[in-house]
Length: 557
Image (cartoon, rainbow, N blue to C red; front, top):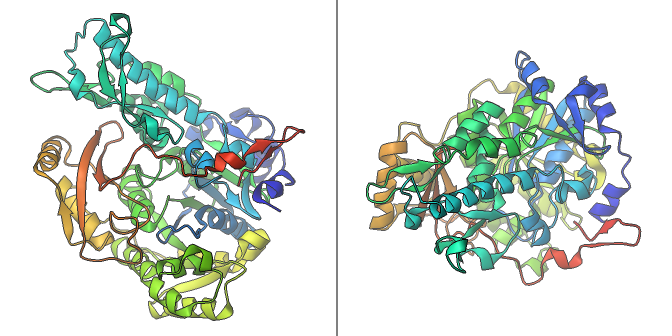
């Protein structure tokens, strides 16, 4: 059966009953959205603060390939596996974006028998969080142009407006637009553009805020542009926009609760991409889960060079989170792809290509253990065409690097297929007594932070930028030098060229643009030709999605 057929036949339990039975969450603190999804009240979240924290486990992966790696599937399977061996576990995931859902990736709720449900709801509109985030973002955009149209008391320079509009869809035609055409009644014409909603600063703030009041304050700190002449920053608070924006987000900020196919609770909340944003689910969901469970699994987007680095250097730093272990997901197929095998030949045994592609896994593993100082378990996400010789070679090479690799068959067998992985991960968590480390210190300059990420994590020789970009970095460093850096870079390679596979070294990372996210409290450094509004592929996944005569969604994967 397809993923959606498996999900639609799941024996789901009423979420209010499940939450109360598993974790004692009173029904009055759950706002149900139908029978199988709900939001937890902020009052209940606040009531948990005196509870001890559980152990936090990060799931990340090697550099992604068209062959697939399976981070979300592994996160769900590992969570079910830990619950099967008696470990009270909650998995915390990001909400899927409609962009990749209708684009190339399809759904993002796991796969096979390691899924979160209701799968269709989660992948499409879910509880409306992304709509609220997009609306709050675009309200601020509307207030900016309205302010200019009605006299521009703040002396905002239309040429220096940095706040674009957003849409939760891949639409390359909207990257650069002109607004205000059609005469004086429509305002002043100016150049503008759209980003995808998951790249919005509102999304980043939403995922890093620790409370509704913190959310409102961060929204007020958003810098939307600069004045004429003196170039003084103008904020959302200067436009009196942050109160209304917070009002639009007051329900969205509550963590979402769903279940796995095996009826274990899962939190799915927030969804920034890891290539153009910081790639982690909300702090509020993660911290709530830590107060309820003994083990919490959270996933960071794309490869460990992006998602894991931002999880450590941005999310953990800001939220004072202390991960205990990392699971690095790899597949034989993906490593053969990194070794030079084309996608249509990946089902054939090729030990030479597998050995060659191991350099990608090796670098990720070394980054996790050396630069983050965390124990790491390699999870081999099993595919039916993997040969015994390939599995043995992969495991032996990981062992030669001082690591441990476990074959996981959760896609086919659910939690039962991840029990061995669960036991190894639990042991790694329980044995770890040391603290993680960061890639750079807060006191380093913005340029030094970019260089540390590029040289330590990407294997680059250094960072370069033209004089204009370097001048902007220096200007921001004088004002926001203590902020962490969020690198916006292709997820397909350690370099800025998506076609360079394996583990390239000695390359330069060119910073083409920097953006201030004063409310999120980090600086985005765009490396290479990285788009913050993706486009659709030649054959979008949307062409296969439909509704049958019974009203059931089909073709979603």
